[in-house]
Image: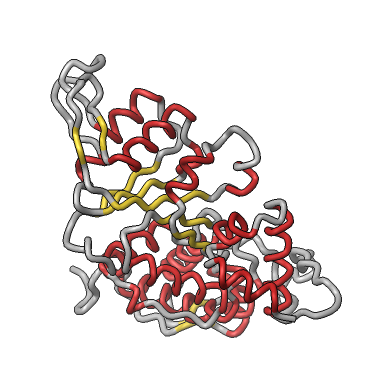
Length: 332
């Protein structure tokens, strides 16, 4: 039996809205502010971020906070599918459309009618698939595989990719017309290592969720264990954090997680046996002004240079209004 009051934490996440999300880090606050704007509109949204940063969850939360919340949220990962399977999954197929098609099947666009369709890893799609997505998004029209009947669907599109989309736009890998169509609002989800002020609360939330799910009464971490997690670079982001905490809770017999229960590849800390093993090198820090404002300005200038000083395009890639970009550039 599940512990009393222990509604599955993941279910609560899926039902959450943006009102329940808070952050102490500037980069994440910018992301959430734009997400709240996105939720008030029907503009297409493009979510950028490393693998494991929570792009799917953010898409779901935007849907839950929008006028379409009572209608379907349909998620689809578009990576590593053949053209036929992609067509079938997205647009559906008629009976006999291909070998093994023994019945009519609705596609994701049709299932998401009046709701939200989330296309994860959209940059992994082939150019042919991108063209079909562009038509469906631009005109709301598509055909099931094996049929010439034109179908329509009112779908709000949210897309995501972990790939460096700006670099892709300089090649023929990703259609520029599709990018401009799906990026009405662009959200950049920061990596967990770039959210140091949120890490403690995220660790506490994962411990509470894992303890409830495993029917344990774990109250927290030992000092050494906490220091290890706070110093770790989290290449797998939130997904890795969940895995590490779930495993640590499973291993722990008492009410405090000790460092031995943390199965991460970071080398032992200085206060532990075997501490002579080298820890991961610290990231290099530039000299000069190390304020967040200065870092933001350097990033803006780098994106602007990459865009050939095209402010409109740079503002789009940065997820900023043109007026906001001008204001930030004018600041000393």
